[in-house]
Length: 370
Image (cartoon, rainbow, N blue to C red):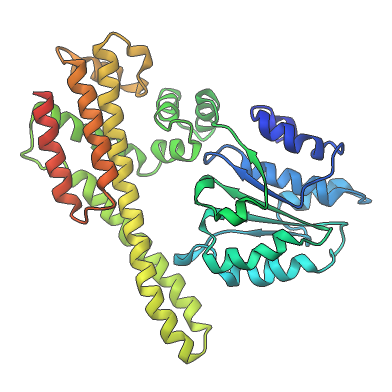
């Protein structure tokens, strides 16, 4: 992907980073690239790294090729892993220590931290000195989709660069390139609200089943048909996702603990047990939240159709079902249903009995929609 293709739809990013890529401006020692998932932050970070590391090289194309494959010795890319986010061990030697050492072959060194909002307090505090007093050849690029969750002292030491939400047509085109049917791609792009990662998840794998379950939950509330407990279709895959995440996190934590001395290992295992439970809970809640988000969007689309504004519906591949469901419905009641779903989503993290919460939501919805 060319520089122009990456930055053309991001005016702020192009204004800040474009002159550096073109060799017309000096780079900052630290950047914070922020914007929604799928906006192109990682690609832009690769292109910035390529430009910085190719400067003065005898074979700049070879440098760019190796950077694109993350195979250049002066490029370090840190990603979150395991149940602990980004820990001090993930940045101590690879970033903090390495940033004070001269480059291997280029004039500069570039360090990319993906998921900067997941930097633990220790890791973030350890990086502060590097950000405050960097070596002249060191450049850090932090990537995040949640800038408000990045430690304030980290944010204040970086040049913020905004990446904007991709257009629906762009997301849909990328899905079609992955063999998703055009009508499904268009709907998933709109339902993703500008998040290309979410659009891909909706269009592939377990996504279609999640969409179907969310819509059936909404339809059951519309018709007050609860004999088949439609909330179970939301709970079961969410619980399965939580279990998978727990198993993966537990395995990663066990591998990390094996590398520690016996005394430290026992403490690490105790800490990891709590962290693993948090991971499972977070993944389960995230899956339920996404299901409810889709249910809320179904009610929103029904309201659009009921008011004669079907062209505004997101689920464009379900227009016939939306027209059937909206027939004779009061748009005000459908909008109230959207508000009820949003309230349930907000309380998911506070109420541990998700099954009871979903069941109560279903009955509240049926009352406002009757």
